[in-house]
Length: 143
Image: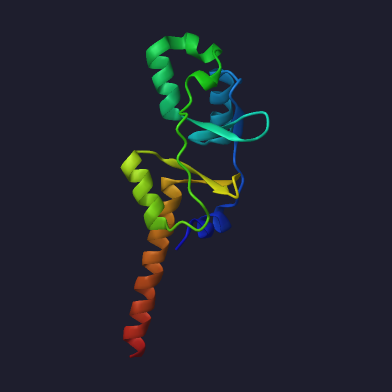
């Protein structure tokens, strides 16, 4: 099972924000879209960071409400871990768990091709396990 299967089910839509947007603008985007992270891009559309709810909490805890009027590039996570559509669910789950991250941008030929969350990965793994269990039941009944 690969990341491509998740993207096929959920789509390749990705919410992006520019690093020059304020934290307040970015938090509104997350709230309106009901998502936990947005990919930060530069003017050319290249991925330069990730802004997650965790980043927002850290900003407010460190700099208070004043952080909301500052550019989000000051608070985003700059070290962006990514995956490809060909990566296995086990490999991305290991990466996410090991690095304690919940979102991975999916890159294809150095272009943003989607985003997956740990919830997406777990949902797909559970569906696969249920499908496998059902197939085994049918095999036993038929056998």
